[in-house]
Image 1 (cartoon, rainbow, N blue to C red):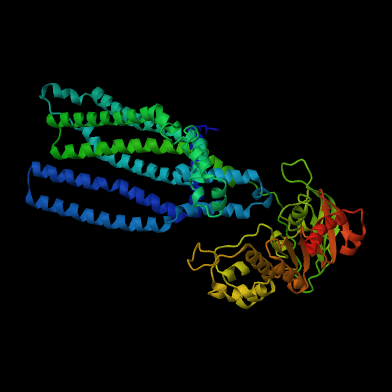
Image 2 (tube, rainbow, N blue to C red):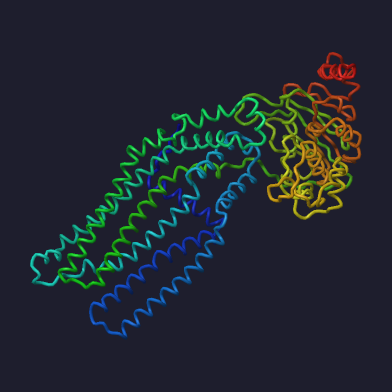
Length: 628
């Protein structure tokens, strides 16, 4: 398992600084509100400490009733004012930091939306983002740890400054002459020795704690792996989709093996983290706590000795003990915060590796002509393509021209290049070799967004959302209900629409509305077809559009295909060759090449061709079924 290597202090601060800039750029109010609130809550306690010391001094000294009244009223007023401002600042912080996990997720989503599809589709990108998210959910590494560390850093610095301002006089106050051996407390060497000892202990305690915390950072990958295993196997019984297989194949026994395996479960009583807690990690934490107690003893001893010798009064004892304790806490928090930021640096670097993925696809500048007659012609001219990182060509020397307003069927065995062909046509990828032309111009020269708008596509892995039906069809919040309903009718969803309790406003699924409806795979496919129709693009591409439909619904789609497609150029990918008969032209793909083109009748007449072989391989089953 790969361990996270610790960065130098310079590298760590640079990485964390960049992360803070990104957060501020996206959410300035969220960052400012947290920092201002932190500074305020770090400094205001010193007002109470100072005023309390004055009251105690007055009680132990002159006992002037008017001064006491003034100090008490001032303390109460200050406390009330501080409480009011604290409440307002807290409200500001809460308002702009609600859903902080979603705020960070939005940063990743914006990157994904703007990323070249070639990188988005890469397994390496998916694995990187998955690791980043696991680091966040398992131990809060990344942006969340950064923000918490920055808060701690600001609080520590302010606490130190406030504490030092009230503590300086402790070392400047002199023990009166004639107090015998106590006058040694005035000696500069002793004062420096005490300050040095306090600073050393103050540094040592959090440093030891950071040493212990470092074990969590360097074992983050092991941590994530076990979280995934436990998260999957422990929750498998709750998975409705897997419930049948779990019962039929007794998968609960597999779950028990992983959940109870002492070697694989690093969180068990005999796991890795338990051993670390009994060993170095636990010892570091114990030593940190012990050193903190020593510091408290030195502070009380030094302050009490000077007070006993007459250097200052009882009120000052309260002030100095509280202030030095605050200074110590501030110094400890400062070192802990810096330690957290250093431990967090490799995780921030991982995030920047994702955020810095470059976009190489040329966006183009030419305007796509908006033709009323939809006279768009697309040509593949000697196009070859291989996926990034692959040595093998997914497509090789493809030459094809689409006739406007015609129906093209694309057929072939799995892995023959059909889906790759569609991705190139939609410019999700650019060809490795050759050109794709729109009206005689290389599609790379067109404005990317405008070019994408001439295509409506129903992919095999299309997605519907837990939103109202109408919004799913239109792909937007504001839509034309008449048009949306017409598209659903054309896609064969009319009867189901009539049964929807709220019509187009009925939510799909129950994620956001308990009255939402569940839909079958076939119904979802019809909605996806309706969405493609709603876009009303000149090219419509259907990738296995009837795969999840029953035979009756499939026949209905075929019968209405001309009505559905209207005057659009349609490209239809299918494994069911019987569905290709209504298309004007058929392209047969095999091992990344187009080996046949023609009509159904023409291709079937070539008994030595691939289409003939594929057709008869399927036709025998149709014949057997009809004979039965």
